Length: 91
Image 1 (cartoon, rainbow, N blue to C red):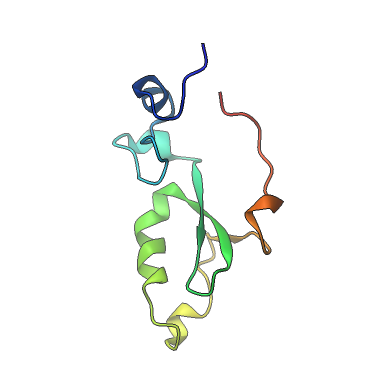
Image 2 (image 1 turned 45 degrees about the horizontal axis):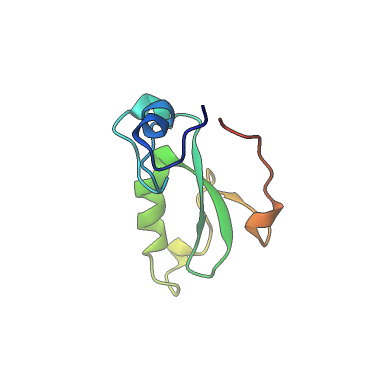
């Protein structure tokens, strides 16, 4: 049986909430997990779930502040569009 993203069995197996946007309560489940996000200039990145807080803080830096001009090294630029990302079925 395949579980829908919103069901509790899916969350228990994959360690994420139904929308996938929040860090799970199980840090071990977040190792090797990533999410897609945009910076202040609408560039897309693949970001480790374990670095979500740091990413959110970096995204809050004002555009005219030099500290926000270069993305953190652990954020992987996608290159224009999330449609450039491929993946296998996690189920």
